[in-house]
Length: 253
Image (tube, rainbow, N blue to C red):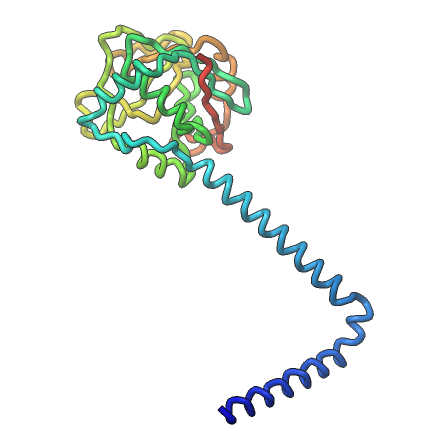
């Protein structure tokens, strides 16, 4: 115990001696700015950095957020009853796609119930927000629903890994302004649809060779001029626009 007290007093002596040395060597600096002013400046700078970091964290969270749903992730074997029930409880058929080029309004068909219900669900879950029109093929189609943001695959994983059965029986064709489902070609003999990506036909005479290969589940009712503007953007590899064409999607009714 005596040894500990001795060490303690010796430490105090060294501390005060160190303070005196520092005070002497920094006398000129203290004449320019007081300790209080310096501390205030450092605190202000720290608060600014904290606010900036918090804001970045909030934006990152919002872009990756999917509303909690006990049904997620949706399993393939549960998809049809899930979307059938969801469609009964969520009857909306009109959506608006917002872009920096303007807005595109779409009517979804009731006689493609699985595709309609799935799209409405994704809109309400905020999936499409901050995704892109990631494929632009002038004189053919513009395709959306994907991005190179890390949040997009995380959202997909939370919702589920499934394919939507084709709904060709509804008889809708790939005419100008058709709103159709993209699909993955690999090992997809049933021509089932991707739940996350769609395309708009911008070819004036339509694209009939896509009939009964992709499911048309809606049509553009307003904003084909916007779709044509998007179709003119410069693209790089894989028809991906050099400058991202971001979108948000909202329910109209």
